[in-house]
Image (tube, rainbow over all chains, first blue to last red; front, top):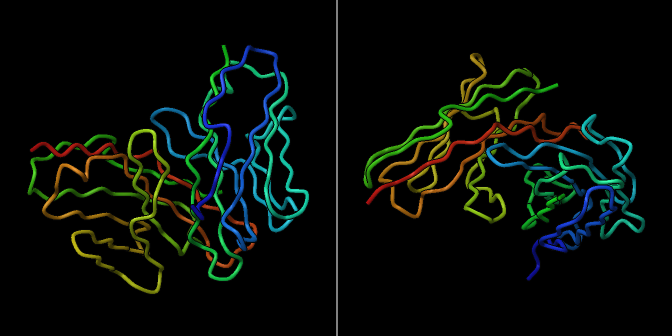
Length: 114
Length: 114
């Protein structure tokens, strides 16, 4: 499967714990995005990488959130000291640098904070 | 930043009927407008997109129209089938804006009854 891959697909964690999600984009896609989606809402932009550079961060990305893409390939999204309001699906997407307007989503990582 | 409004939030039709979903956007610089379909528990998947240099685009039973002056665009599905049942999201983006990302509407749940 050459699509965007995310893991874990589901994570249940206790409030206050840290969680980390991983995203493997489509190979050769330079651009990588993280979105958050809650029930009944559209995806909300969190952050964007071009290669290893994090070029844009939404104000939704509080200090407890950090994302990395150290070698310009896979990316991780870490949430520290999770809160119940962090419960959502975290979607990763990628696009090529050339003609990069179409973005391709992964299946998402569901987070439930109890 | 960009703001995308989508209507209706839910839409029920009989199989064979047409369905229309409408979106408005606020940023006149936006010039790329994709539509995504998301089935329950699945990733959003691109079904059609339109760029601002065209007013209409068709792909079999689906079509998208764009009115840049009024800043609105619509998705039209003809001869609906039960497998069209899903949540549909519109989005807007300024193309070739390196740091711009897609802004999504809140989605329309389409239910096609046999």
